[in-house]
Image (cartoon, rainbow, N blue to C red):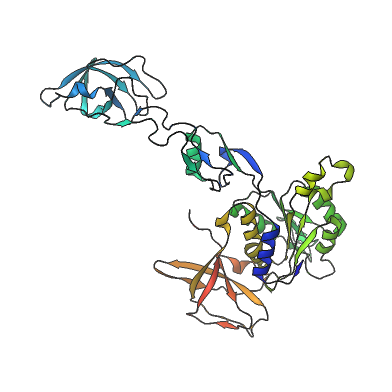
Length: 434
């Protein structure tokens, strides 16, 4: 176990403990947005699967129109119509045409089509006023992609366009890395339900909503958060009933050294292997992280799995964050987020570093003994460094000063102020455009 490591040491260690998932699922396309392909994807067939018309008009043989002139049109006999989804039976003969709709299969014998706007229909006769060229307005089979062509590589994150490609090739499901099930729990007897009168000594819970909403912004789909009591046995029992359905557990609160900071006892009761205790930066130094196997939560006579399968199980991450809102958010972004990105094959989630110029000053009475991260607002400037604005109020318990903040600013130990014009490193909390 690491005790009080710096950010980089904690991340390097946890990344070595919690490895990327290799569990694969077949997920319907309408549920696969944001998931990651677990294998290369190749076209099952040609797209389009047949030669087809590019627009509404008439299919014909170009050789029949060679003598067509404005003052001496060629006359073709219209012998039928073909709509999208249908086919024309038989084949075109000399000086025959077929009325055709956009996307419909080209009739046998036709090598071009002309849009209805440039020809004239008189009864069953079609007048063509200029020669057509072979393959005018003609879409070839396989013009988009050929059978067997690679169009999505393993590790691709599925967006609306890649899902459209999967659907076009006839796939109804995507082979993806199984999405993570992440549970959020807030620990404490101090919480009062929302939309009620606040009793003396109670507070409303912001951490649960903030953390679950942020995980959804990451692309995960956590269930509603739950509140755990300040009783280690009761809290452990609730967690034990939930953990088998979860891949990652995140708690907020009760992780420091107070009389009611129960998460250390909960770890003991659940048999969690400790990985990191405390962190060498603020806010968020109150932190506990471990790994747990489902087999540890199962009585011996309840498990039918082989010893080999149990030994092959990887540890499930169990993160315990501070109960102070900004401390919880900062640790989620700096520590938990990169770990989730690694496990879920989502490299775009890893926070990015950038340079920015400070346009509002920061000062404190004296420099902190530890590395510190400040909330801030980054405004991108075309062709120049982004502007950095710091809000008023930086204590870890303040929520309203987080409004609009989209980055973290690092403050080195001993540094007491940042004057206007300072160019500094920031950690962006937004996501890069695809």
